[in-house]
Image 1 (spheres, each protein chain N blue to C red):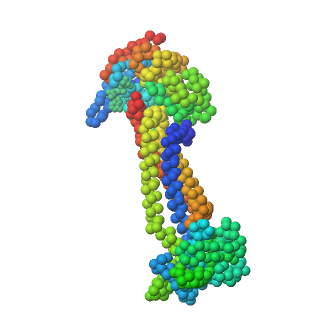
Image 2 (image 1 turned 30 degrees about the vertical axis):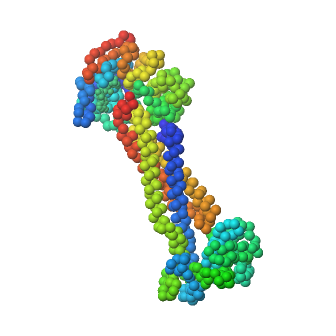
Image 3 (image 1 turned 90 degrees about the vertical axis):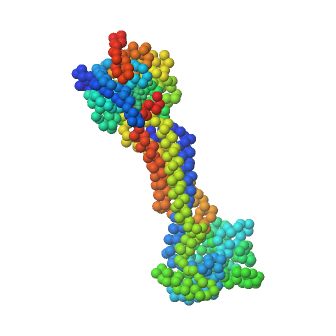
Length: 385
Length: 239
Ligand SMILES: Nc1ncnc2c1ncn2[C@@H]1O[C@H](COP(=O)(O)OP(=O)(O)OP(=O)(O)O)[C@@H](O)[C@H]1O
Ligand SMILES: [Mg+2]
């Protein structure tokens, strides 16, 4: 029989067992796909931002620390800096929705200089610069929400004790969906001052564009040295390192993922091997008969190995498909957390997952296959009689 | 029947001074000692003897599934005692048809596919295989059951499928270890009729192990194995 045909029949022999094995491999690989996809996405995102040679200034204590607004001008005055803007995360609620998209207070005169790959109609930009409570948003966000120019966008403060009553002045186009809204940092700061609320004069973070990527490291060092002896020392890093820091905030995510993956692969191999071994034991006499009528060791080996690896490979493909669909859905639902679509980051990580699915199959099939191949015909037949 | 040299009266099976011992946990179990046996083409031998006397062991030696401790076994012109395992496997697929007590069909394959199984080891084309399978199923009278799975067949029918599998490759020698051991008298009778037909009509050389004297008398000759020695040779009154 064509070996494949026989393998297929054997897969259908115990449908429940095959299905359970396929599902267990599938779900675990779905988990791995999501984790690996997420790290791959961070890498892709980091690599993407690398080419714009932007840097991010942060209080050395991180987001909780103060970054005086006066620093913005001092950053601008530093050699090698082309443009700089405060970039304060607002985190407000929109109507009944809790932080449905990202909102940042920045300098309307500088923001599009720092993100010079973003494009906006000059008239809209001018309008924003003139309107104290004006804002601009990513075109994809505006389209999703159906916002038109002039739209009122009220945001309720969660972290700041001042609510924003914004008017949409313009939309920008950017290479990737940022799912963000920008407003004038001064509007927030003045509001806070009027209410005598906390958090005034804080730039949050400063994003700046460096004249050339060669200068990046030196500029970061210069800035940190300059502020080192002040009340608010800083930590300056490249934008990609900054995003990396986000990704690593829950500890060393990458290492966790690696070890989780390893554990999953290992336990799956055991599960699949057990299932295969049980299946083989039930078939001892059948294998003996195959060998009696002249099947060679190699043929037996290939048949069993093929069966084991096709089960896990099927499961693996199912899992990768599940994981990718999850990532894609997550991207559509929350693109600030999952900034890339799966189609934008097809790459070695996917191949790696499929290869490990096949690998699990091969390894789990080896022991039963070798044992079957070496089974002595007379012993195999005696066990039945 | 394709082997020309066998027509020269050369024996199909020649067993000379064969001894067989098993070794288990440093204990030697002597099973066969000084066995001599010769079968010509078209012979039909019934091998009888008490349980544990070594019938299956002898059958396995002749079928090339095991090797003797000493002595020589020559079957269809091939000395089996020194042939490598992979070579033996290929040799078996060409020369030996197996019939087991428990039929041992592959449960996930239909009757047709079970019979086709040994043919997939040959170089026959798909169409030639189909012709062979159909012919074999015709001989055992199960053409109408070719798409049934073993679990959809009775014990007697399963054994007939396994006979079809044994003859599909047109082997010289058919070995059957208690082929009727698990069947009722009626089915057993059908199986014995079939075996007789294979011997008479198709000139197959057959060795059949059996406990049943009624089955044994259907063969052309009967030998008894006792404590590892062939003690008695009777000619059954068939011819
Ligand atoms: N692989 C083996 N290892 C150890 N001992 C074996 C092995 N095969 C057979 N024997 C021993 O050889 C003896 C003969 O076994 P065999 O199966 O040939 O008997 P048998 O005549 O076919 O019996 P039965 O009628 O019950 O089938 C027994 O004592 C058995 O225990
Ligand atoms: Mg026996």
